[in-house]
Amino acid sequence: MFSFNSVTKRRLAWLISLLVWTQVVAASAWWSISSMSLQAEQMAAQRGRDLFRMIELTRQWSADHLGIYAVRSRQAQPNPYLTLPNRDLETVQGLQLTMINAAYMTRQISELARAEGFYFHMTSEDPLRPANAPDEWERDSLAAFKRGASERIELLESSSGGQFRYMAPLRVKPECLGCHAVQGAQLGDIRGGISVNLDATSLLAHRDREIVKTGLTHTIVWLAISALMYHAIRTTQRRVHTLDLARVSQARTIKKKERDLAAANNTIRQLQRLDSLTGLFSRAHFDKALQELVDRSEARDETCALIIAELDHFNAFNQAYGLLEGDIVLRSVAGIATSIGERHQAICGRYVGSSIALAIPACTRRQLLTIAEELRRDIYELGIRHEHSAAAKFVTVTVGCALCEPDPAPSAEALLKQAALAMYEGKQKGHNCVVLR
Image 1 (cartoon, rainbow, N blue to C red):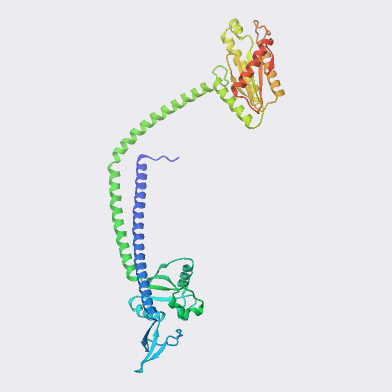
Image 2 (image 1 turned 180 degrees about the horizontal axis):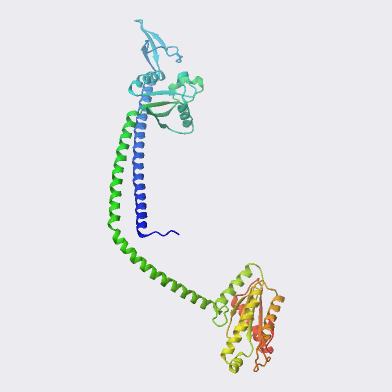
């Protein structure tokens, strides 16, 4: 592992602080620039809506007057797509007149509007006039209107400038049916739309100037605050160094005490878990382990077993040979129980006084009796002299056994009681025997 000294840590803290501050400034700049771009788009969109509304009102005025007549000229030639019997008239003075309907008026106004930096185009997917066919952008917009869109706005930027495009749908009105009924148009249908194209050069130039100003402002603020942060860290460097030294000393002391405390806690846990004389599990830990075994066996639908073995006439042994010899006997018996337990995956614990207990998983009745007899025989074969025993001339045990059936399984306490009763029954039968209840 790498070890960083205090100076390196402070430099790392400074770099992290600088990175966070840079991210904050960058986020603020991004938000400001995004807001400016959004504002420019909103302004252009509103202008597009206003122009679209003006065009609609102009068309409505023309439609309300059932079209108007203009003197035939180079700018007002007869509309070949208007097939009305009264399209062309001649006055008594001999003036040649031609009808200007709403669509024709819209097209002529659009041609005049180009000189003002914008133009609009009336289009549909099936126009009477081929020149009114939609371009690709308009075709996509018409498809969007059929899906429910109410308008479409897009900024198209290029190296020479850019333009905002706005388009909204035109629905079929009664006055439209005179020309478009032959195409199957019905009232309320989306017949087409009007796209408004605005020169965005000046608007984008203004936006770009504001973006540059915002970028410069954020850069200046970033530099100023970064310098202040660096100065503050340098000013506190000596104090931090002193505190670091104190912390190191305190940390060493705390770590030593923590190690001592952990060792003490581990010793306490071992003392609580194991019997100090025999090295077997303590009674409290054995009871807990036995209950877990009973629950696990019931869940697996298995039979488990319990053995309680108590030394015969052990009080007389202690009185005759002394407590130290008695402790040696208990440790010897515990060693045999541990060896048998390891062979059969059993849990061994000191039960009460001179008695020990074994909890055996996945055990049948025959296996239980075999293990119990093995325990009794091995202890007897130790050949420890006991002249004051009524059972034999050597140290012996009486073994009580209990079998735990899974359906329903008794509690650990009930199983202990059952094995203890079996052991007491063996005592009454003359000791040095195995009894199963």
